[in-house]
Image (cartoon, rainbow, N blue to C red; front, side, top):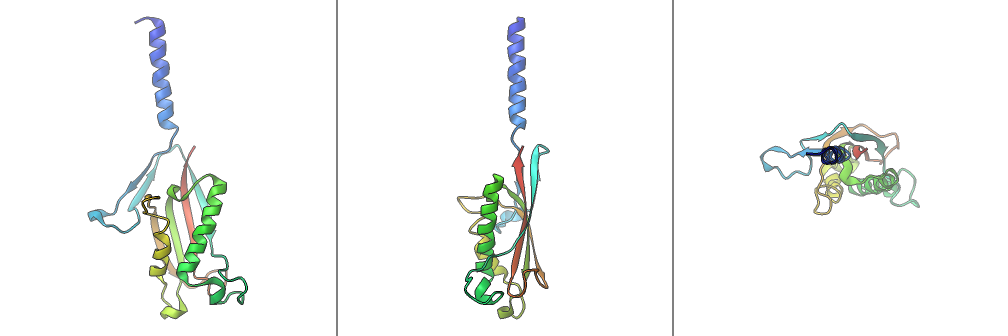
Length: 169
């Protein structure tokens, strides 16, 4: 092998190595026993990944003409969750990421007065499943959901969602 051929092989190998490392790998571990619930048991990211810790997002008013802080102002849990996801989507565009890049989610829900003070997990899931585990966006984050006493936004604000996203460097 002459020097030029050896040099070409070395350059090609280096280029292949560099290109393989220029994209983050995200490994999503499914729940055991083929459980269809739309979350991942765990998510791994490679060291060449930028993690974005997105602040918690709360809903905007569904009816800005209603009395501020009323149920009519914010809506029920499903409506509020849809509002939060729309607001996150807008923020993600500015950051150059999308819902497929979400690797971790924490959901904080206040008990719904119309449900004897229990969080409306079903209402949240109706909104969540429009954004995660779909044919268009199959990636599922690891996720925790909590019932809390209240949010800083005041009465009838029922949900806040915080996420971590993985973006290739």
